[in-house]
Image 1: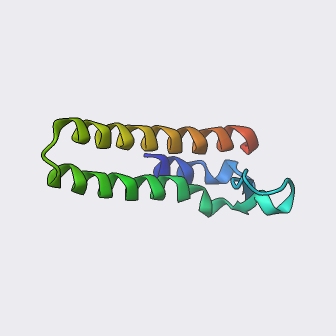
Image 2: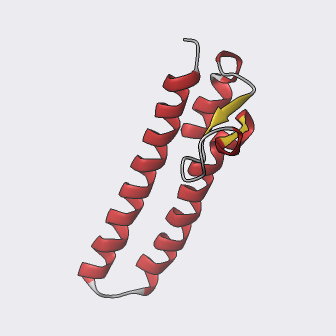
Length: 91
């Protein structure tokens, strides 16, 4: 969903957006608008790995922990993308 949101709002976004907040302020934080989908892609990788682990592990508690990680990573990546879009977008 977040990937579709980025491509749908691409015309309202500048060519570069601040995404890498761990780097020093300035040009180092800026990335091309296309890289705004990276948190969503990272979240999809976590979903795939955790789904595989849920199928392998028999412990109910561990399965619930992996499910919680899936929900958390998806929520945080979506929030990060929306926050950046609201920060620099012209909606």
